Amino acid sequence: MGQGAGPAIHMSAIILDGEIVHYEVLGRGRPVIFLHGWVGSWRYWIPAMQSASTSYRAYALDLWGFGDTAKASAHYQIEQQAHLLDSFLDEMGIGKVALVGHGLGALVALYYASQQAHTVDRMMMIGAPLDGDEIEDVRLRTQSPADLSKWLLGQSDATEAARGEAVKADHRAVTVSLDNLRQMDLWELLGNLPTAALLVHGGSDPAISASRIDSNGNLAGYSHRIVFEDSGHFPMLEEVTKFNRLLADFLALESGESPRRLQLKDEWKRRVR
Image 1 (cartoon, one colour):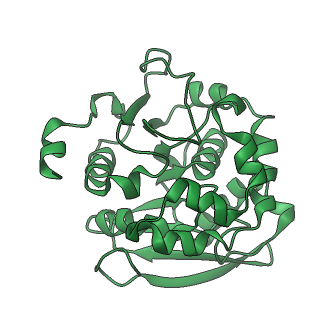
Image 2 (cartoon, rainbow, N blue to C red):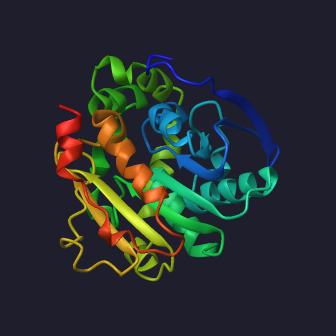
C-alpha cells in the first residue's frame, strides 16, 4: 500500500440509501471513525489507523463522491455527508464513538456532533476552517482533484497512494460542500458543542488559515487547539510519529475530560529526529 507494513486492512462496502459506501476497518476495541477531507480518500489514514488499531477498532469511510463510494451528487452537502455517517453507525451497530475528521471530514464530524452529541464521545478536527474566509476557496473550486493532490500532498513516497486515490473524486463533491460551508455558522456550532474537541492545524497549511482562533482564548472550555508548526495540510502524513502520539493521548482521555492539557511535548520532537 506504499505506507509501511502493518496488519491487513479488512476491505468492505455496504449499501446505504441505495448506493455503495466503501469503508475499511482495522483492530478491536472502542470505535474510532476517520473521515477524510477534500483531497484524497480513506487511504491516507492508514498510518493513523494502524497506530490506533493496537487499542481501538479503527474505521475509515469514503464520503459521497470520493474514493470508491458512489458519486451520488444529491448527497454532496455537508448535512447529507453527516447523514451518511449516521446511517453507517446505525448499520454497523456502533454507539458512542470518537470522530477524527480532516478538512471536509472535520466539518462533517462537527455538524454530526451538533446534531447527535449523545453519540460523539470526543472529536479531533484537523485542518478545519471555521468560516469561508479561512479557506483557499478559489483554488479548491477551480483545480482538478489531481492538481489539488499535487498542491496539498506533494510528491513524496509517503503520499503516493493517497495521490492515486484523490483522482477518483467527483469535483462537484468539493464545490457543493464549499458552497454549503459559506451558509453555515461553524463557529457557533463549535461554541455550543458539549463534546470534547481538539482542533489541529498545520502551521504552513496553504489551504486553511484558522485565523479566528486566538491562541485558544476564544475557544470553549471543551475545545483546544494544537498547531503542528512544521506541517502543511496533512500533518498525519507529514509528521506521522508526532501526530499518532497526539492521537493516542487524545483517545486516552477520560470520557468528558477537556483536551486542554494536551500539548506537543518536546520529547516527541527528539524521538522523531
